[in-house]
Length: 274
Length: 274
Image (cartoon, rainbow over the protein chains, first blue to last red):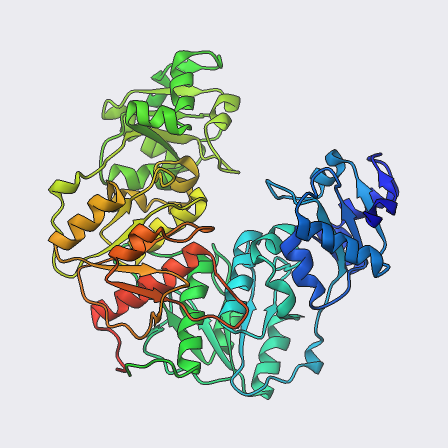
């Protein structure tokens, strides 16, 4: 296997390993503009969109034929990389069963001023999602429902967190990602006639009762605090999911899925029984 | 505080502690028919349904006034209990911020032959959900959507797993729980005219196109394997959630939420724009 030519690192103080490890932290990611992914599915889906900066392997684990071929191809394409000892590789991944191939990628943020929403597009804007796993599940759901991208409006909302990426199951790469303030987001939406739909238990409108117009952005708040006053005030519609008496909430990713698929179904006009 | 009269345990080999710890395992739970919960919300919601067998406290953490009052009330009601050292208490909970009060409860399974579905009821049947967190999120969603109960059809499907209970956010107690084989479940559904609605990527029918009839049971399969042939064959309807080309799946709890709220909304006739 050609990728055996990659240098082998087993010293935990090796600077190449330390650089990889720093990307697990928000600080390390924002300083470098990079992030890491792990696993065959993630690496191969990432490749559909961009070449990685570098890769890292655990040859003792990389037994899957598809994974080996992937490593081989990346080596042939001249992508730099290292082989890590099993222990060091384990330190870089949250997976219970690491797959022996990971990659470093450049973060890909779309600048707000380069963003013109096409007709009928659907967006997510997350003000603050406390659980990285929930944010990742939301991104996975957004892709499946045909959303175009995610606005990360608050500092807690980092799509490049390793736990978020893991939960996206490879969906991150297909979504446009935009980082901006709530104010810039609402200005953008106004100027491009994007309907802002906010979800809140305080909403007066059953989410089923609204005929959504597009383009639209669904705005979601944090698990504990919900949406800020600022975002509620700039919303064109505030909707709620009716729940059984006594229930005050469902999981934020489930709620987002319920709303997104309702919006997506109205948009594709597949609502056959209307 | 009267609950100071509860004996204090700090020895990790104390049999009272070992009994509590054994309830973290499937074996320990099935041998005793008991399970444990932790946190003020869980304990207070459990109390609405049944008195606990016993409680355990970490006085060094139980600072919240509502939690203290809860412990006081349980002590006054004659519920047995122990106080644990901080270290031992931590061993019993998955919470990142334990709240200092937990309880041992008796599992509450409804026998299949005692179960007659009322008009318009909605049920969940889970064949096998690999992630306990997903199962808990499904139970939380089921309660909010107004479902009556959960059929646990496979050995992997244990609503009393601590990680499941944690994700239910206290919703477990309001749901009827039934443990039976897929065969017994489908016989029960037939004989009580409960429509079996199976969710599968292989379903030929868009979930939005179906007018659901009630009572109904939504059957969901495992994250990786989906539903077994046996359950697909006994379904009255096999539906799917249409996804963007190239996407094969969403999180099982999100999918369940999308389907349950569609069913719930049809049932309550709040589908105002039809």
